Length: 589
Ligand code: ADP
Image (cartoon, rainbow, N blue to C red; front, side, top):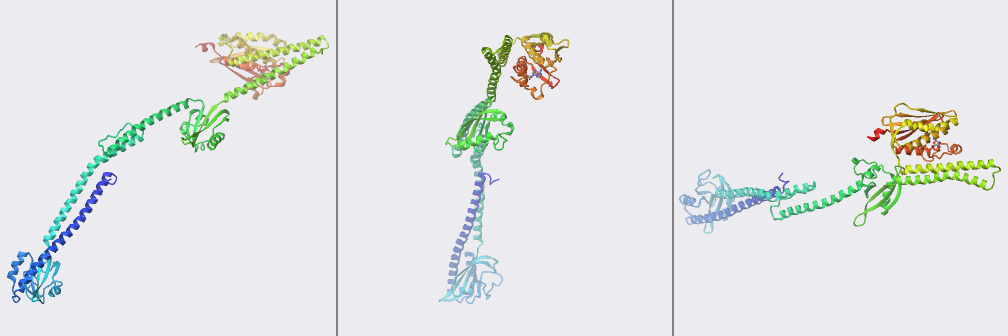
């Protein structure tokens, strides 16, 4: 805990330093005081010893000195022992074990003293049972050592002084630690608090909240750091705001685009993708941004991305994806320094345009093809007539009839084409009215009745009572029925029957034409509504010379009414063409 905070660390360092310094100081001072005192005391004792030795040497024969010695002892605060030159006690101020006259003095280095040296000693003196400072001084008479003086002074006062010094040092240490702690608190308030405050603000900034600010309480380096942080926060907010506005605009543009846009970086990570592109690549939003190499992406597209990354040049081309045609433009994205940082691909769906183009081409080819055969027939017969190839009037008449037929067919073809084009381009005006289905059906059936009779074929009308009205253009709906009955008549064999009828439904009326012709193979059924489609090309051309446009016109008219067409067939038994037209009432609501 202490270690984790800056002030804690500071406090710990100060405390350790103080303890170390005070300990060394204590050690040094104690030693110094001790040494100083002992050397002073030893000198004093030696001097006193010297004086006593002189005093004794002045009366070498006197044996008893106790009286003087006791007075001196008190005065100099030291026990005194006098020995003769053999080390036997002569006088002594110590009363204790073995300290009587004639006893051998117990003192280390006593020999040295008796040889004339002064010896200073510190230690426990057994006779006194305490630690003392002792000095032994030889007594010289006429350059001869005649004995020795021993002075023992207690060291208690020194020990006490040293202890007092140590106590002061201890108090000093505790006081300093206490002061360091108070300093720590003050520092914590002045340093740690603002730093913690800045930390909080920085964390908020990381979360995207730039509103919280550092409170600046001082003008020192920490205060400066705080105001710099506030400035940084304000600038960041400005920049991020600008960036996100730009990003939002870009996102809006990309989202509202119909073209697919994908941006990748050099390692293939998708940086940006708009909804049409996600849809095209089958990426759900939750999938997030992924790497194109992890995706089951169209390999052709991957190759183009790779090519742009390698060659660093733009590619514009057309590709087929999912049966759709795209114009694709891939452009390298560059850093300011010029090196490549990714690729942006824009895919524009041109499927419809291409389909329309091919439809147009197909249409022109079909029309030319359809026109060519009657025209070459016309040319052939006209040439034959012009060259006088007709042998007689009858043959000439025959040629002319063929010419008339072909001209009529040409006219029908051109009319059908015109109708279909107008229907497809919506250039035809429909006059929607309330139409009774029964009337419509009977009117057309009656028109066909004589034709059926002529060809020995039957026509049956089947209508339930109370059919609702439909909303439609009478003339156009008649055209639908005429086209259907035309086909039915054409494909129904002699003695066969064609049924025309209607069935009411919830929102529409279904009108149908059922024949008993050869039927249409299943795989061809869905194509019969296409322009110029003929199931059996050879037969159609030979027999009636249909244009292949009839059913396409039917489908277009019905769709213009908001209805739909349907065809079912059983080969060999017949075909049923039907269409639904919405009810009049329902339309009006
Ligand atoms: P066409 O003018 O050639 O009859 P349609 O568009 O009306 O052109 O018909 C397209 C093709 O559908 C025809 O060529 C024919 O092969 C087939 N078809 C149309 N109606 C019938 C039918 N009732 N029975 C069998 N085949 C039919």
